[in-house]
Length: 180
Image (cartoon, rainbow, N blue to C red; front, top):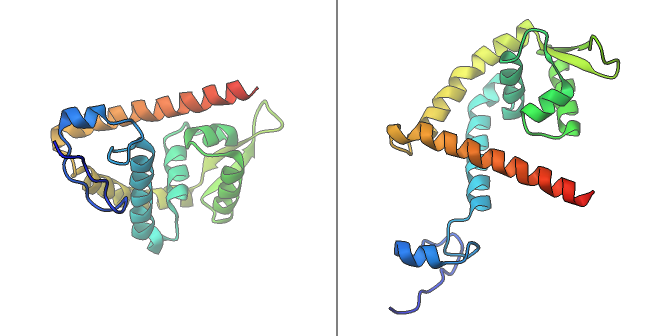
């Protein structure tokens, strides 16, 4: 078999690789599909598509994620720390996001009943209306994106993606523990 040529550019299409040959490639080979790049490309494309789909509503994808998370939590709300964990973000980003959304009248902070340092974040009526306005846009976009897969494989894909996300989180936690 003649030696394989590496594409001139990472964006240039490569010639098909036989499954056995592909399996023998190192995990970081330029000819291999690589998890970090694919996940970033998928997230970025989805985020941009959603951002452009909801810009008319005066909201961002991160704000929708907060609205949805609060919509799906008990009526007494959740703490900012719980929200940070639920949406896989960092405390500073969530703090700024919550403040902007509170200024929009979409949510409110109330003192926590047992922890004087914490507040509960609750959805206000305007936030529920905004969530309802955006929900159909989000659902239709998800269906269009998932149409790249045969219908019978979509749920399995989402479950596997959840497993990958959980493993990424576990690896991040393990790396943080090693630093200590």
